[in-house]
Amino acid sequence: MADEKKQESLEQEKKTGGSIGGQATQSSPQGASPQGAQQQGSQQQGDRVQVDDSAAVCSYANFCRVTGTPEELIIDFGLNAQPFGVPTEPVKVSQRIVTNYYTAKRMLHALHLSVQRHEQAFGALETDVQKRVVAQPKQ
Image 1 (cartoon, rainbow, N blue to C red):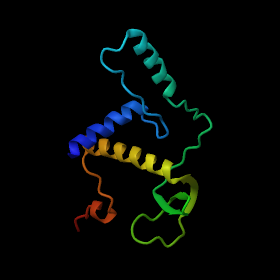
Image 2 (cartoon, one colour; image 1 turned 90 degrees about the horizontal axis):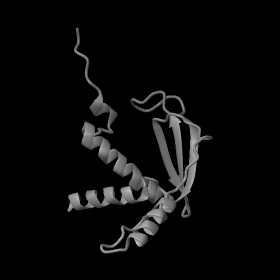
Image 3 (tube, rainbow, N blue to C red; image 1 turned 120 degrees about the vertical axis):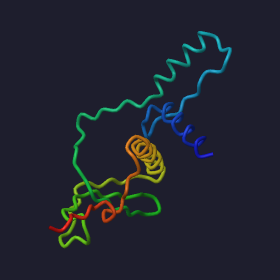
């Protein structure tokens, strides 16, 4: 069952071109005419979302806070200078994304697929920092 869902997710991502807001496309039915297949192919090309990221700003974040209202989700990103324990200084939020829940759900799905692929290639990710810390032998 889990393998079927994973395969379905990968197929859906191929159809949408990996974009969060992409439109799903249908494959042409068997026995379709070549002209119909050509039209379908050009329609699939048109369904892809064009993205211009030339003005995008890139920043690093190791902190995320999620809050929201009944209509919108607010996601704050920042840099936590003290990732171990409770920080003594406030975490500076550098980026805020406000989105609707539909886009958030598509983003959740895209992030899930990306993390799943990473873990398949490199192993499970441990999110508890304390479990990742390697104790240094005392000398």
